[in-house]
Image 1 (cartoon, rainbow, N blue to C red):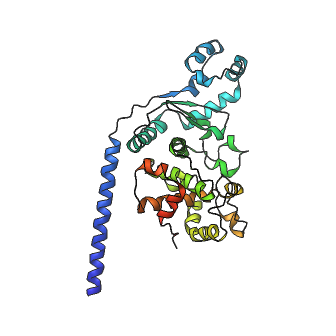
Image 2 (cartoon, helix red, strand yellow):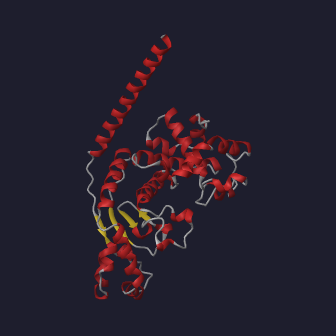
Amino acid sequence: MKTFHWVKVLLVAFVVVFISSCDSKSKLEKTIGSIPVDLNIVRFDTIFAHAEISGLPQLKKEFPFFFPESYADSIWEMKLGDTLQAQLEEEVMKVFPNNDKLEVPLVSLFQHIQYYVPKIQVPRVYTTTSDVDYRNSVFANDTLLILALDNYLGSDHFFYEGISKYISKEMKPSQLMPNVASVYARHLIVPSTERTFLAQMIYYGKELYLKDLWLPEVSDSEKIGYTEAEIAWAEANETEIWRYFVENELLFSTDPKLSQRFILPAPFSKFNLEIDNESPGMIGKWVGWQIVRSYMKERPVSINQLLQKQPSDIFQNSKYKPKK
């Protein structure tokens, strides 16, 4: 009976803590949701698609950042009459027929960004097409945010048939906000003076931790660009991954090949073991994320302090220990 009594007490305590935590998060989200964000989205993709050659001078005057001076007018005139450009816009309009899929998540994202990093101002947002230039799908500076929507039509879209699956899996509407968050995060993270594999992991761990704060309703898989199966693999093999890094003395190595093996986008991570084909690429980023999460639980500091801290400091004070 005593055992049952203590189990009941612990269960009640757990429920109280859980409810308190949920209530605290709810209050925080209400506070963030009350931050005013004046968002203006200009659908340049649609404007360009319906423009006439005679209107090119006015377009260049109104949107100079879309018309580099190094390109002759003949290039833009050709694009205006190009059937591929028309098809690109047609497909974009099927997925983004209006701004509903853009405005609501962008407002939420910038509310969260401004709560944690008030110095970042809400930019003017422009949408465009890029001939499926997935390497440059999002651009941002202090005043502009440009979204190339033809890179977010759906992983299996016929435009992406010649693109490797490990890349095209991220070319879907739900990946747009995580990509925007990445661009802003990289503007904030102070580059480390350290050049180790650990430093690279923690750099991206900081980026992904910012996504935890800025995109609380987004899944971990979409924050990093994994499938749910890839996240599950990483979680199930966390101990073995960490043991491999430690036993092979990779953490403080400056070997540039480690970035290609474990950091950069790839179909899989390169342990040079049988498990390679089962693993997702970028596993070093995922491990760095867990280290930063562990650090912020042990040493909760301000976001500004976190972004400036050296990787070795974060690692040493994180008490990171893979789940078994």
